[in-house]
Image 1 (cartoon, protein in one colour):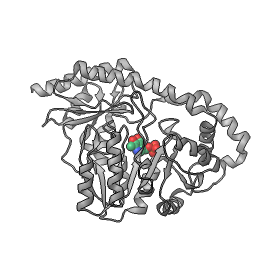
Image 2 (spheres, rainbow, N blue to C red):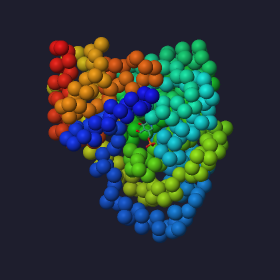
Image 3 (cartoon, protein in one colour):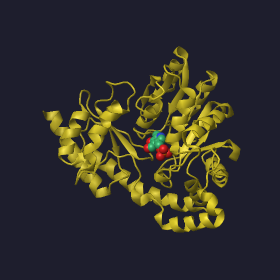
Image 4 (cartoon, rainbow, N blue to C red):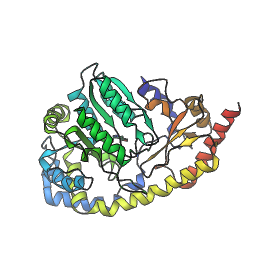
Length: 383
Ligand SMILES: Cc1ncc(COP(=O)(O)O)c(C=O)c1O
């Protein structure tokens, strides 16, 4: 029901002249269109008709082989036979839900968390245990408390440049979280779609590096190649991986062979290394423009995240404000965002928050949109 509520409010996004800071999708200019013909030619010359054939559920062999160094670069040490390819990381979230969740099981999630994960899990009817967060993401003590007081089927986290907040869990907390899940023999689903989109600061290794036997790790090519190819990647403990394969087989037999063949050329041919800096150079000034505009225009007592990468900023207004009501006022002035309350598993929380996306608009438009939003906010505070 919450999902249909959000769909309802986002219907106005496509109205003519609307500036959307609501989307959560990459900029069209971030896709490497200029190399696509070359990649397609390579796919047909190397794999011919096999690139259009049914294939293994686990993943197209040249692709999973190319994923080994790709994952090693993210500190995930694995081998081709341990990787599962899915239709986006959304496909991984769905499969994990189907394998692990029985109705009534408790799943621990950050508060707020990625709405698409809640959507993926909801059909399996879990109960959510909400974990407290601050500017540094999940508070480890909150996880400790949840694991002590409950039987938790798994914990779902987006530790780097989280959707919706943009926050990242610092290294010391990652190690603490790894220690906690190992001590409780708990299972973590670590969702890592954004870590490659780093604009400043030092790289952060995944929690999986510190607790590999307790983590199902998932990442995606959606933000570093193209989301329409639907390529998600999963590395899981073997006892779980084999069930994920069986479940996926029942859902779609396998992920699109042609997409996997294209992506294997993209990775193994060194195209990703050449293209990723272009994506970063595209998004970095957009993020800087939004941060500058927030500082220039937004009320002094509002707070917002200041992430070193990713696609989102999270704004916290004055307590008691309702960003869903203000959404309609902003929409009248042709600017939209996502009210933050939709990202909380428990309703009633986060009404004074909003998620802002900066990847889809140019810098000048971002500046204007934030100025308009700030007028709406200031008028609401005076009313
Ligand atoms: C945290 C998170 N996980 C998963 C996804 C799904 O990505 P994919 O395109 O790989 O299915 C998204 C997409 O926005 C996301 O933000």
